[in-house]
Image 1 (spheres, helix red, strand yellow):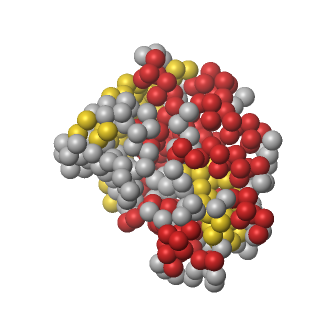
Image 2: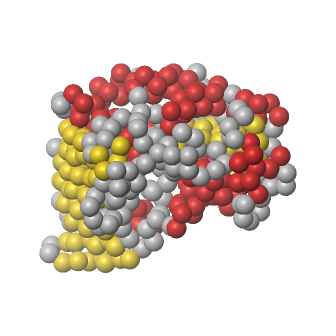
Image 3: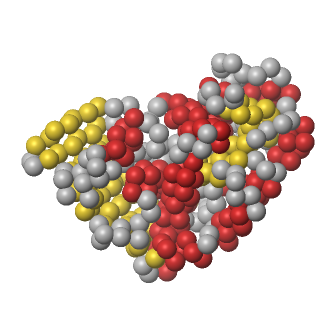
Length: 357
């Protein structure tokens, strides 16, 4: 039986996630939350598929009010980053399993506040939403990174991520958080490195740098840490992954949101550019695949994510992996920001201990 949920956000980017919720089997929208009730109502009316009858009349200004009027077991949060901590703490306090779109927060004190709320409700599933780990190409890369299935022990690798994205804020902007310091590592980078953390866990150490850029044509704001950065991620065995990325590329998306990857291991190598993956052993390409990368509009990617979230709630399937690796991605990105700000190497175990343990 599908799990009833409260969906926060009905317009702009959140509208597509609401469509994914309508499309999925394991969850269904019992009620919605939005600060603009009229716009939310119009957004719901434009949904396709099997939309629950009367959903456009079940919109509330808060999660609390929605839960008082409708039985729900979970909450999906797709709102501005600056509102996340309040919304996540409210949701957990109401006893709702919670998935909040990345970045769940961009501040260590706010992350600690969420972790404290979760400690009071440890049986609840808490997930930072990451919709780019679920497509077939990402799943195949993850499979090949597992030691027994692909390249053996990982010895090193690199990821490149260049896109040209307008971060301009305005009344109709899809990027309302363009002035949040350090957003690149918490938003742009997380799309790629979440795929790494999903397969190999969090690194042991991080060294990173971030930069700002003003580009009025592109809409770059000049706020520190929004345009791009570099990072070196070191694992327990000494393997290092180098990362370089920008949201203000002069070129037109030479690498997509999934990034361009190379991995070297004891038993083989991986190359991946979006949906094109190759596995090499002893100088020969033994698998050469073209797989589905990101789906148009990411609606199908979120549909898969929501069904996995439902399984974690109802059966416990992959609960630890989904929760720990999604929050591990946040810790990795925050380690990048902390390293870039302080020009120092960050120990992930120490960061985790200060925020969670």
